[in-house]
Length: 439
Image 1 (cartoon, rainbow, N blue to C red):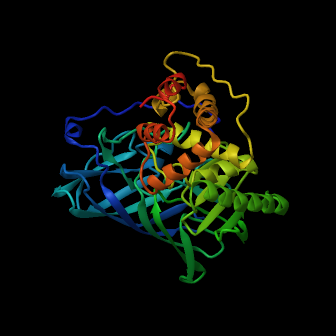
Image 2: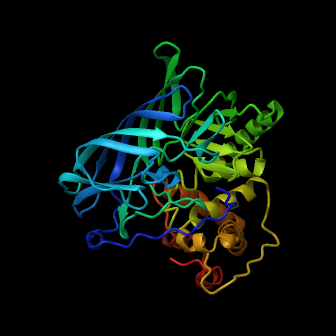
Image 3: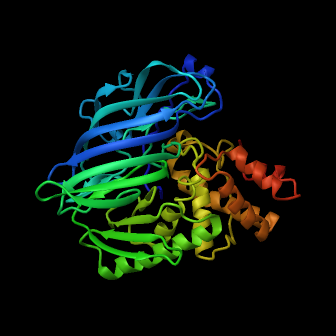
């Protein structure tokens, strides 16, 4: 996501004593979400039911799970955009972290390999204003609205605050089956592969199935739609608001097809079958990535960037709050490669001793004017510099093999540093120090 505006710094949540008992295994693992939602006449309010099944992959028992209700950051705790009620399979606590986290205590702790299921009713009310969760008149954008499981790993439960400056999101590859019952006059582009069947009078039920995706997003509105297929066989749908010209929509369709195939060639074949691009020049943020679904203004650079996120954060996951460089820096590098930019003239000038490429969003929210410059700009320059140091062939092979080795998994700074060192006989210690890559 291009970061264009500053926000007030979030407050990190301190570790609790229970977190000290965790290990490095990421859990709850292999989440499978089943969701059925029905919209009102506009597509701005959705109500229904969600259930999620998961397994404890850790040797440490799992006594609770946390739901992240990210879009409550767009409201208040007294006017919640995302409401969870009638929980089954566990006992709900009180909302935490500005009502973006909800603890569900399980009936009994799950040992390693054991599975559990929780269910609940959910209500989603899209808030005013155009945003990744918001609307532009009759066009509704519904990102991060589905309650998702938080991750527990070596750092404990990740209950980071919402950031509007970048992303807070950290999720494991999951399976989603989402039923969206909506007026037939509305299109509902969504994560996954969608099929439509007739619903009740004047309504359509769109079922979207996404396999091995980290989250689910959709839009609703009277969009114009054009479609095509990449040379590699990926279906691409471009949805536009009424103010977008046919010429611009077609140009963006061409860019999407070319970029998906180019990224596939560099990092491994796009696995999700189809990709939806939703165009609106009103997005203040330029573009925003979700699995198989991106929001974008009319910009070939932004679109190539958002589609590269399908690999870096999507297929090769990371903790976006803790190490945003692992997706934004890599994605901007991939965008440069798509446009045949070599990063010549890259210059890195650090503003303080505290400024590091691998700082978290907590730091960047407190130093928001430097976020884009460092994480995006210096981030891609670091990868260009690495390519120049170890050679183009070694760098090309490194990124392709690294993606393959972390396909549907999670990347860390330490993982990438080790893989890069293994790809060259040159000692990279001083390179990491100079570029302030820590971890």
